[in-house]
Image (cartoon, rainbow, N blue to C red):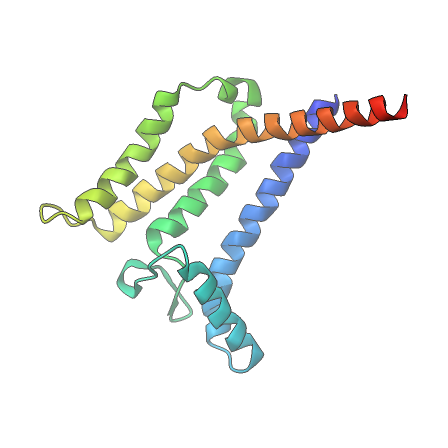
Length: 169
């Protein structure tokens, strides 16, 4: 029973974290429209997300006349991650724990191929291919990250409880 609570806690914390992350991505353009402290906060968010994303205007979704804090591929990776989290309870932990590693490769490969061919002279990825492959990659990644994360949290909690019990006796 304790393991179920730990798994649920990890799930809820990750869900809240992803929702906050996505909210900040959308909040940046809303704040950028403002002046003063709100506008400064928008600039801080753009700078923060700029550490991991190129933020090119032509490759980004727009909200309220401003680009989101990350490009379309990154936005859709995070959205795919959220979708994977929302569908996770339908699959069940036991089934996802034993997914073949080939599935991870197959889920990430389209995004990697789209990105790598984009730097070649033979193919120019479109806004749609960047978005779709990002979504598939994010959803796939979640399915492979969540089970080991839940197990690690369970192990950490159980080891901590065992050490506490040994210390008390």
